[in-house]
Length: 313
Image 1 (cartoon, rainbow, N blue to C red):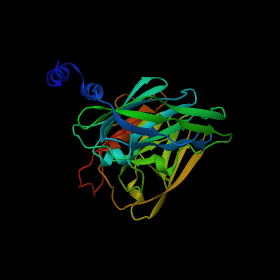
Image 2: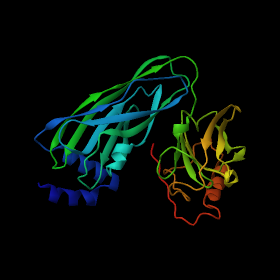
Image 3: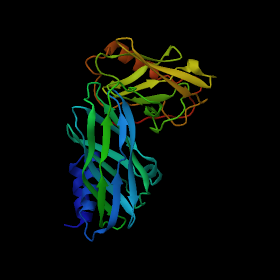
Image 4: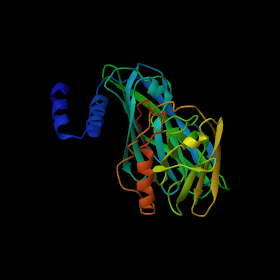
């Protein structure tokens, strides 16, 4: 059956995200393999409890690649992953779709309704969260499969180079400045009064529990919380400052401190976010969670620009 007949049927029976995955896989089933493209992750070193940003690099050595799918597996007893689209894929107009296939395996699809080629560079920014109880040693971020298509729908061979993580003794920072992202663009950088931010980190929202997030001592309303991610609203009280200190405090009163630059206004929209579907985790104070969500809907007197937000995990 031709693709022009197959896709309308798919659209009637599959959810939107499944349509995207089905279209990508149908495209990857083309013939006439081309020259090789390459996916790689550089080796890195970290400590238990750390959250480390790691780039998935793409290098095009042949025909233009317009769609790319790959699976990554890790030792889920010690590592977990979050991801946002990288600068090379974003600049090529591609969207990132992420689907967990198993506890230790995740599928990534870079695709869009266009034939724009994916440029060489960082296509996915992985945030590798290392469990506080991770045993020092060597861990692999392994590419299970990798498929690509050119702008004509023909398959392109893809080579892969696994990433190697060396976990050393000690205790790493649960979050880094690169892990504090704008809630809409999912890019790191300065923060602004009233901005919705996404913080990715190792067990940041899990037991013994997140007690609060403050900026220069001012509490930030929380709009979403999970094991490796927290969404919050930057307090308006930091307006007029050039830098601010972000404190993440857990129930045992230990704190992670990060210094961040302050911008006069958010660089991207994000006034009234929609966190990922689901209810707050069991350990979350549900009353505080609901109140913080209500508080986040107010964006202050300078909220004339429309805002929106998205997140990936």
